[in-house]
Length: 583
Image (tube, rainbow, N blue to C red):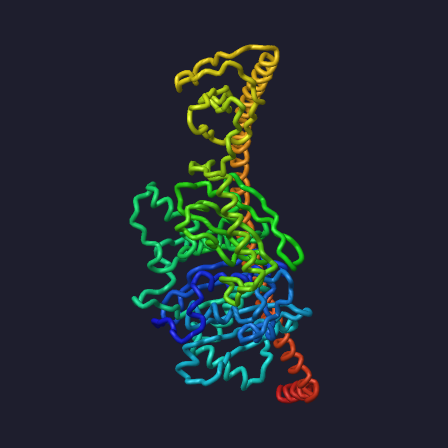
């Protein structure tokens, strides 16, 4: 079924990738309940063979009441201060943004009771059935440990009505197929299947599963014709420019912190966590204390490691570990003052909008925006020269002596006196350098006019005891300067060696984490297979036991009947009759 995006829905403004992230937030919130993974993958609708979106986690799952709240509008069970979701409508709006229909399977153990629930939120069903209200069919079961069977928690009529809707409008046409999806979840967890995915105006499915078999992309957003290695191609392939269309890139930076024992599996491959702050060179850490708000925030600011070859800048603002504004432009692209400057901060003192794609425009938020703009420009002014940009600073006026002389740095970096006559015109300005030391003025006698060539030669002047002492001090300063430069070069080499070692260790840690995630996933799958085998064996044992019990009961009943009806006397009489007959 080709579904076109509904133009009258409020969820149209919600982009596709943030809609998937909204569903993923529920799995992240389940980490506190023991979740270790979440799977995002392509699935096939068994009814028509069309692609569907699968999201599954091994968290605590939902009991029937939680499932009902999940599929109803305006409810939220998340009261934790660290929980990402809080409004209660995220699941509904995001799933409806991705496709026309969604079916949810969940299992949960609560108060020593194992329950499973199946719920359907179907735009197709509501439109074709012409309902004027939202109807959400659900079925709930509880596991009976004595009989090893699932018993319905509803009346027979309620179960029949809801099952008929589920089997007609869900991807599964039989009860066995429907309930098998709950078995795939295991003892606890949730499985979401979004089907009848929306198509764009060109008739193409908005989610692109074919361009990259290890990724999910937005159709028509990643058609780059630039040659690999060119400056424009490097700019287009940067993470910041891949975020709008690549789910793998978006998920890699979606959360500021991810536990080591939790992994996100996108189309069978682990999503590698990416810390944007580690992409910065010459970083600075600035403490920001918002007014009239408790607490403070450390903002990391620096140049991208690819600067100045990429035209990217902005702040990545997180809220409760979740990325809300990626590469937020607090200064315009037309202003080169700030080009390449990127920042990262977690702002829990401001509230995001319901879509989690922006913040509420409160006075606190506006003050933060103003301060981030100031940070960008201040950082640029003091550090732009480190990546090759022309550094503009306010230059102090030159200090003149009574003879009109001042000091200028030569090309080789050593201060030498430059003599100017009174009629040599306006004083020459010198370039300001960091960490420079200017010696005290030297009194001169017998100043004569010099030319530009004479400035580069030794200056002839009267030599006295005071001049000799000052010259000796200048020589000592120059010697100290050379010694410090040598030490700086040595420290620079050691820093490069340590950076190489750090990068090598980081690579080894990443490889170890990937191996750990792979082994963890394999162990989960093995546990699932063991549980299924154990369940099958227990079911076979129960069936055999029931058959033997029934057989024994039949025999016992038959013997009882024989005894009660005097079968023994009958046989005795029969024997006597046989004896008489023989005689």
